[in-house]
Length: 84
Image 1 (cartoon, rainbow, N blue to C red):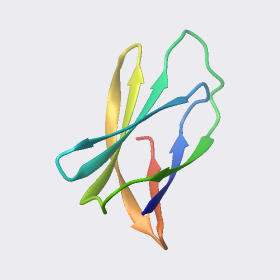
Image 2: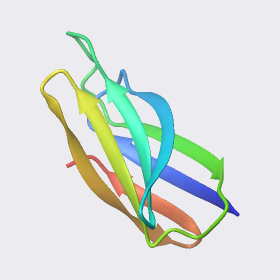
Image 3: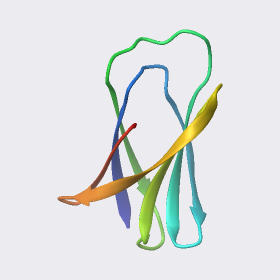
Image 4: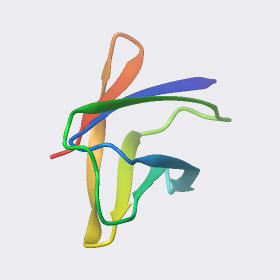
């Protein structure tokens, strides 16, 4: 099945690194490393083919300061998330 994720980040410079399963939750991994970034809303769309439906879709953003983890909500067949 295809999972479509649309994430809005608060700054540019985000790279998609892949996905993994944690139990029944599907975790999408992103990374923003470096010193200077454009401070503008940045949207990323990712489509992945997976073998089963996830119980939750999680976004994991790694940064130099540590990182953030937040959940995506299913809206009209698309999982949407926004960086807090």
